[in-house]
Image 1 (tube, rainbow, N blue to C red):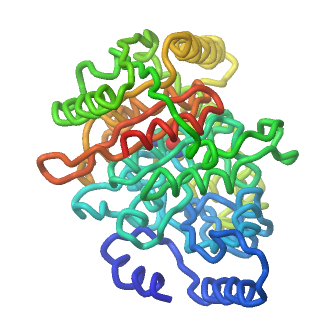
Image 2: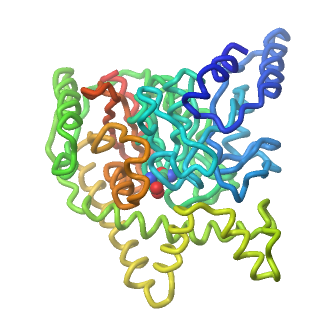
Length: 448
Ligand code: GLN
């Protein structure tokens, strides 16, 4: 009740929540109390609320992806992550705002409302998981889940001064996650500390026969590994992430982080990831191509919004999609259909897949020499609301340091490392080897 009151008091200003069903939350809390009273052996996190980005299926809860096309849609089933939360006794706590279908970097593409950065409400919380980051930063929930296709957990975590982890592709099932770009999407935890993020990661991880891309082997729990004896590791500093375009105060904050690691015994090595400059165009070809295909399912027939204006079957499709999708989503569908069209497939899509391999190989080569890679999470602290929304290219560039990690399928962790002169959080990113979340979190903990 206290937390729901907190949301009622604060959220009109922050705007992190799309909905919060108070009754349902109280019911779930009572059920947890009853389990405890019965003396059942409970998981230590039983009864803790968790904020949910409005992109994951939980039966009977809204699932709108902050889009008009799904405005009235309630999920008929619970996805794998939802089931895992419920079996751990966690309480789904509200549906959090996001860029429509997770497309964006500021949460301004939400068809419902804007979310504001709790550190300074003139500024954006980042995106697309802006609601998930802002809710944790504003103490409206202890932790939350986001999804990350090109930085959507790490960039808002950096902008809002919280910890966010994008797991290795395949560690967390995508069954029940509304698809944006299936080869890049991962659900991941956001919280106030490394321990919280590790705990939530373990709840949601694991093989899943319902997702053919989920990693089939059971992995060691990251939270267990986190508390095992640790040795200072070797960190790579890629020169391409510290060049032009990065704001001086971000650069110096991250350089201080490097010094902290050096002081506690980590070895620091300069490395190169030579294909970094190609990551943004490569991502925007692959992500839009997959999105154009994934979003074909919103046809005005099987899902909610159906235009009343349609005169025939084809027109129903056009009108419903025309009315239901926002501008950025339409832009991506058009771009994606173009790069996949028969005349341009080889020039764009196939090329992008080849470059994707080069980007991944850069990382794998670097991991021959270092254990993890340290970079800024974003080139600048949170920009102002309205500053980039009319300039998609500059918005796309806000993801320049996070996107390669998704293209390469690696885990990426963003942690806060101080404030800018104007009082906005700055974040740094640690990139790990595939499935080495335990090591990555240990490294994060060494700074925390
Ligand atoms: N900002 C990126 C985009 O607009 C990434 C989004 C995401 O990770 N979901 O595609």
